[in-house]
Length: 476
Image (tube, rainbow, N blue to C red; front, top):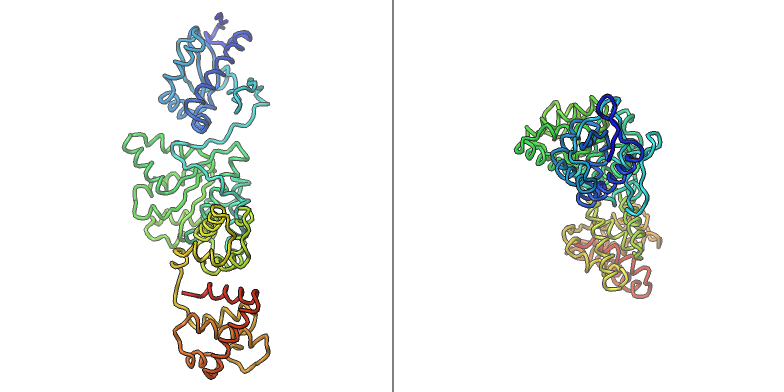
């Protein structure tokens, strides 16, 4: 291969040789991508650009010293082997950091389909590079957790709005960091994955997501392997860093210090940080004061415990996506019984749906209680007459005082009879004790209410279903 060399002893190949060089580089890139995988290839190798050729040596250029050192240590020998195999005239490969004025061919836009034609685009037409996902340091984003699949309600609407703002304009949100906090299973991790998914989709932004636990383990590994500088430079070069479950760093002073310095470096460089924890910064006792202060300087967004309406919305959304018909009564039952953890609520519904698909049976209240007996048992508690009265009054939209009043209108008397029936079914109280709780009524009145409700349940399936739903939500 004849290569023209200018007075500076280095020149980019002439056009005819340039085409051969491009074709050889394409083959090498395709083989590397097959060997190391899509994520690792995109992370480390897409930024390599063809540099000048000097005799039997080709120079490959990378944008940063860190990236050059990493590619040299991890892939240098393999690159030399592949160049020698594909183009025997190239015997040596030199990796350098690109300098202003270097003759450079832009990085190849390697197609997802190897059969597609691949070419070197003009600089102004080159596609934006994919966001760097640091595969050896970063937990993969869960593609199920997007903004579209996040159900918004009063308890989480502020946190959702803040997360969307970061995903849309990470470089100009006006607050840094975004600190999300709330109890287990309320959606903090979902929002963080949604931010990452949105940024990756938009492109041209490097995103790093990991749990605080993984941050600590990787930091320890870097110390042991004497590669702390690489660890620091990797995390401090991203555009958006997201750390989940920060409370894990409580009591781990050295890791806290490293995170504090990483935090400062990113903020000073104008990069965005998103953090989650189970408590607000001021309540995270065990974190260094300087770290808690810095965390509290950004936007602190609380995700409150779910309301009944939000739980119903979440269940309806998940049920609709599954394609399985889940009766409204079942959704109401689950929303009443599992109140503290959305993750557990969704898990219960998923189990019901899987059972229905596996056995080809419809979802019913009876099947729900059988399939979820272990989950429901964990939420069981002693039922009181006061709670029965309150739930029944809410369900039939009457005042709680009507349970003990002398009013005899059917709109009041029927719910009162249902409450007496449930008190007899779900508590160990005697008939006279139940009567006293309902305005000092006689035990014969309670007996009449119990028999009347039982009779109506036999005659009216809809009424029976209402009473059964109330019983299942209340029973211990």
